[in-house]
Length: 117
View 1 (tube, helix red, strand yellow):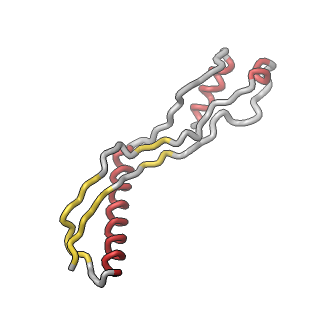
View 2 (cartoon, one colour):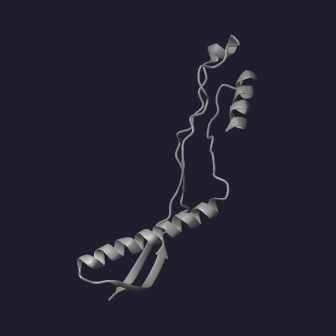
View 3 (cartoon, helix red, strand yellow):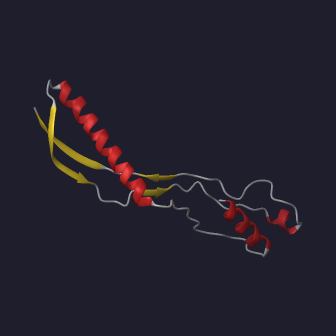
């Protein structure tokens, strides 16, 4: 993020007045995707346990496991580029940062079917 701020400042100072499609990605997305999947499986087990308990049952072994197919990485577009050309034209510093950090959400969705006991 610190390098981004400097880059945008230099671009604006050199006359660039529009920047589109800036994306921030997470390093090692596979690591976070695997973690999200593990949490989704844990949540599925907890939910199945609670649902089975309402029926007076317990869950047994899983008999079907699948993962919904999507890439699971969503960059929320809370980032934007903003500059006042008049403040840069006069050599005055910008009043605020040019980037508003957002979040990168990594999601996993699984379906687990358990035997009832």
